[in-house]
Image (tube, rainbow, N blue to C red; front, side, top):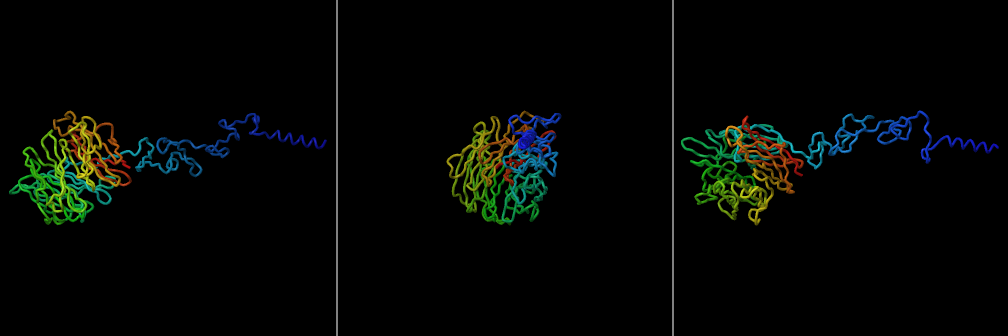
Length: 487
């Protein structure tokens, strides 16, 4: 009897406990509410799915795109963030996107967006021969003409933000300045320009101005005289030998040029050699234009000139390798191209870049090695009815190009057709893909002197470009910068 009573008590105790793991489960006590359908202790909310913690579940964050996708609010000092920060979004999150990493770091739905900024007003609009730029420690220098007798050097930081504008004194009495080049010598940056002078005779003077790394002029006001060319206006380009000790300058008349001259000077302007005739034509309808020079490894210089055969007629690019004194040509090549190729040289190989206007749409082409490659290759093509105004540079990641894809538009105002242009901004990286990096859905207003784009490598896989937009009413010529990702 005693044994049966003891067994009955144990059975009753077990039956009274109940079990959540039993097939049917326990009956709920009357008046007890289960929280949100969770079979747990009455009235207790889970903490991120953990029962019985006593803390509310983390809510999703406000931003849901890019690296923020799926993020929930982080618990900080016992409370969830009211507004999500990097603690919630993770280490790849950036409130303002700064990284060029192929991720949407600020979670706005756009990956590595280009950043546009108005740098400065340019005053008188400079064409491509009146503007140049050069990397310096911590940023860049940009030289341009702002009026017939005014040279300006703008100092930009590594993100292309304007730091200072330096007025460079020029030699007394110039009329229009006809060309500007920025180069780097063994002493630092230098500016080579051509001023047109009217005294007892008309002459064009090629001058060299040494600069410090901040763009401030050094030496005599106006610069050191390289050469004086009487009776004609000339356009010139300069290059510094690879050892930084000598400057080679080539120039031609700005109208009806039949010859291109070259001279080499040291950094104090003392003559090393020349002037020599480095290109010559006897064809009546041919004009030699846009002379260009670049230094080669092992000494010597590569020279280029465009044979202009008239509006709408095919052009010819002449290339020649010269020794260090520009006195003897050791190799040459001729390339038939379309009208107005706007060719440029770059790289150690070196290579030739130009636009081919003989076909539509006009492609951008590259001759990878000017003396070895059998034929040029197409790098990119513009939209039908448009032409490219381009720039390029060789970077640690390969060739980087940028261009304005431009079309003529109907007259916009007073009849000055210089403003009847508009375009969009495109870039091409080493992988060959082209991307529209324009600042908005509408084309940018341009000027016929906007036919230049200066391209530079920036820190952190970013690239930067400088270009000019223009409006007629109100009349304005604006230096624009664009910073874009190019991994």
